[in-house]
Length: 325
Image 1 (cartoon, rainbow, N blue to C red):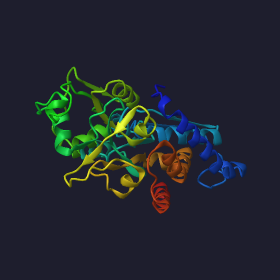
Image 2 (spheres, rainbow, N blue to C red):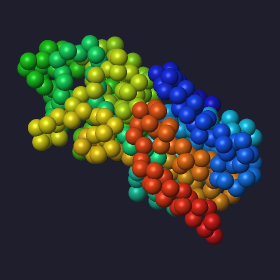
Image 3 (cartoon, rainbow, N blue to C red):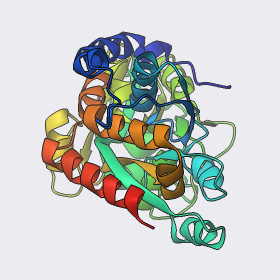
């Protein structure tokens, strides 16, 4: 299985495992499954999709398998779009997503007799970053972001954005086209217009490639999920975003949760194949485990947990989906 290396998130990942182990120890001691049914579970659980959601799901699958060694959960990160391609063909049990499913993707699923339902597991703020070596940019307006990233813009140097900034070429680092992060940025910032591409733009589904590229170049800029910034604060600088009100806001747990960090705050999902819930006890058990532990996992890797009541509401919904005939 091809897996994205999470070296930058290793420390947070270890913390998550410790916390989840403590949370699950009582259930394990009682020999109960995560769904509280008191029965053991076994079998494969296939997960793909968003690289943004990947750190949360990797921690959850690791701990789940420790508690349920007869299961074999696997999680890949082919991007939100790549995950939905597999999900709409019924090839995976869950697909992680950093955006909602598109109507055309939903239509394909329905044509194939696949019912996909979303579960919100955390909140994120797409973070626009430059290198810590960059000493001239602190904040950007939405107009300036568009000048930097839009294909139709003639701005290629930092001095084209602000004459007081260096006469140096802007190097762009962006998630690839299969990424939900790309889709969301394209929608709310670029307004569905093409991104600049060419020799000065690097696209990658691996957020760690973007982190390294930006960190090593004082004239680079890029964007990705907040967790990747949070784990690389010594190398990266998050920029404040002025959405037109004249008050730049930087992403933090508080501004993301409150929605003040707008328009780049967003929910993170995993979409579940309802047929898998009904026919694979291990999938139902894992989804239950996920909703019970996603909040803590999200906080530990740098995202924002949902209110506890929201997870409980979704647990009840999962039970209904699983029991539908």
